[in-house]
Image (cartoon, rainbow, N blue to C red; front, top):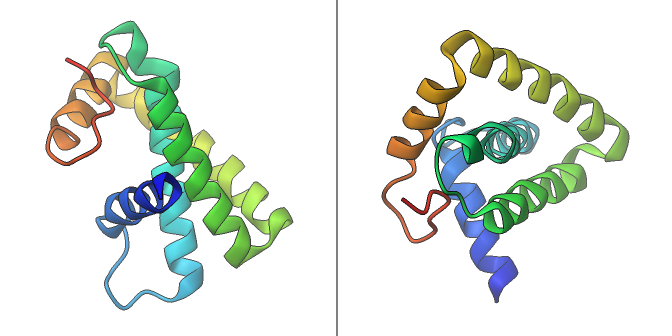
Length: 117
């Protein structure tokens, strides 16, 4: 049951990044974007806000697991590596505090709370 709830959250988060008619591969890539965002939250935002790292890690891993089922392990790993590098560059460009503040605002509503404060 908990796994299904996490998958639902991951799909909801990734829905913002993928059009409704996206193909499975495009949806898998959107899941990897959601996973990279959770990874960046874990890496950078704990310095600025109280976060639920366990939940963020579960969401990230669940998204990666689903994407791996669609893309295959080798392709999913390579795509995630590229996406994570892109995400970290985005954080550096925007600035850690501002990026985390933006994520906190975007994720403030919903059933699962990554940011505790």
